Length: 552
Image (cartoon, rainbow, N blue to C red):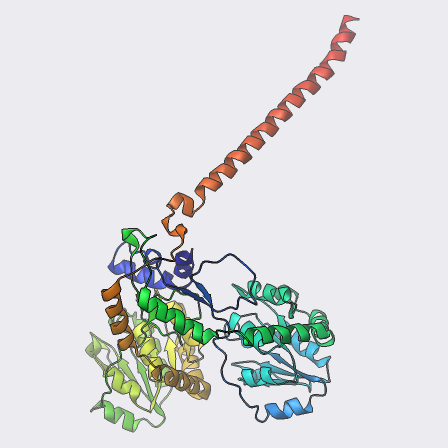
């Protein structure tokens, strides 16, 4: 089942791309082996369930060192008579996408508690929120750990993402969950099971419901006591999450996975994925999946003429446009080329470098600030401090290059994993997306303006680049080490579940389905037979008196 789950969540795009090269390629078949499964949950918190010895709970691994509150957050805590409630919808379902009537419901509900101050970690668009009650404070980014660690924090309202739930539980904070999709409903049930939180249905978000849930959490001391008790249990564990991961990884490296349960066709030591764990969506994976994002990065390059002159003459900076080699610029319809050129021409203080590929000489007349080349030194351009943005089709190599150089991006996905990659940029707040069906001069201008004028994109991109470039084990070393290990030990399978041997009939429970269908058909046929007999009996009773009368 984990092969199916990971295949669904992570691999549909790459599988489609691979099938263009290797017909019939089935990536789910490739991920049926693994040493262990690290799960971002805690066995003391989650539902008790039957598991295999390969499933290792690592809830709380994301927790960082304690942080100190600074102004203006410190002042908000000091001015709160009863305490503070923290509201953070998270990055997947951001506040800016929330309908106006729901925002109004939250603000009005928060306003009903004048002795409690509310932090709303809004994300992008915080400046557009408008008027709020005096006790509600809106921020684009808030220091979550420092807020949750403060003794005056009364509750944490979130969408029940696992990271948020783990953070709240480890800090001993009662929660109000508003699950939207996926595992969030499961996580919200965990809070109710442990009596450390309440749930509000996404379809029942009203001022009255929110007021009732907040009152319940704040006024009923049992939620706080249960949350603090659970936090003590988790934080007192003998083996911490970090140590678990290290120890089990070392074990896997030493012994691998024995082959007692595996058929010859299901062996694969590791999977190298051209993505970075700090960038991609958080998801359940197997330890055999090794992130190698950035492997294509080469050594630094120096800009030479004429590119150096283009940078020198740019007043505000340079934007680099490279559609890539799969969907080249020469195959672009004329109306789209015109849209790009006209949009670029609207920014005279910015120079645009278009890495056109074949056919660059046929582009014709361009605005003065647009420079078209058949090939361009991509690394040197992206490494230059005057580069403002990178426009591409969201191929993984392009996304990795932009992220590792700390450059905001505008993605125009066309097929396969490009749509997934574009969503990554939006999730990390380092880029924007333009639909391939909505490429117009106006849309391009709006996206470029947004990227160039909003400094948060650049800050987020630079921060993410620092995180990735500071990794202890670089992508190249990962590939070399794991390949050497695979060459030496292959793949072992001592902990593989018997489910790996199931045929397709058992895997999809077709035998069970067939049995249920037979039972249902038998019941239905029996019911009809019974009705038929009853009808016949009734007809005989009706006909009998009629016959008697005729005889008389």
